[in-house]
Length: 184
Image 1 (cartoon, rainbow, N blue to C red):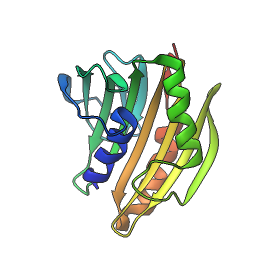
Image 2 (cartoon, rainbow, N blue to C red):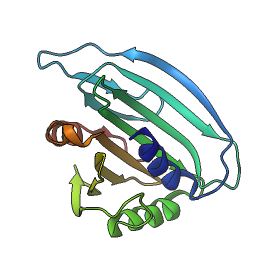
Image 3 (spheres, rainbow, N blue to C red):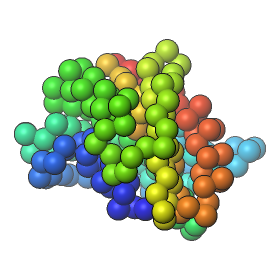
Image 4 (cartoon, rainbow, N blue to C red):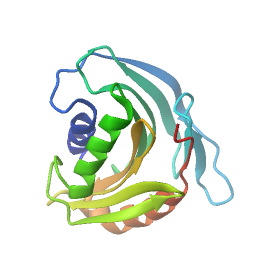
């Protein structure tokens, strides 16, 4: 499961290029649950927030390879003991809006993923264009929302072992609806 999430992120970030990255961890196991048990996870540098069902990590990755499409990513995410991962990543592209639109178009068509999507559905995140994807493989499932920003994308993933599909689907609905983002 973690391997497939890494593959999806690598496809979106580097499109096959070799990566040279520097990670800055802002917070580990952060967050205080509200009355419902969910935590507000505001990215330290990424200008977005989501609600997560677990304590989360918050980090930034800077891509030093000048030929890599992504120059920086901002991530907040958590993983349960059942191996259910809930992750939001803002991707900032070197070529700005043009690159963001190109990659978003691929997601809209369900192209370049580790498996053929079971569904690809146009969506909205507030006023922003988005697309929801569902990938179900023999061992795991992925519910993903990709949001088009001015010069980047925001990927929201809930990935789980196949036996936790129902839980992942329920988590995805609340997680996706919780996004607050500065699109610029």
